[in-house]
Image (tube, rainbow, N blue to C red):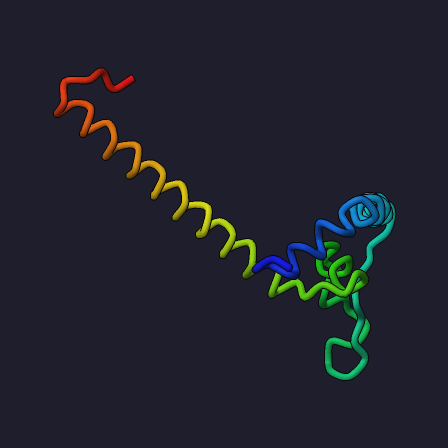
Length: 104
């Protein structure tokens, strides 16, 4: 298992999730889908529109907030690896310049 279990789950259900997401988008173009509450002064008013991404995550057993955190971590990890690689290439280029080799 990787360091990103929620992201792994998203990859496993990607095809089905995209199909269901397309259906929900189509449905929302035709109808207003929202959650109504009857327990306060705003009863009868739509206070919360559905978020397709959250609904799909819940349906597929994915912790949406944790998945979002993992995406941030994946980007940070990628940035660190890229920076390290660039620093390594820069150091190698500097060695070549000092030794009189072409830096191509």
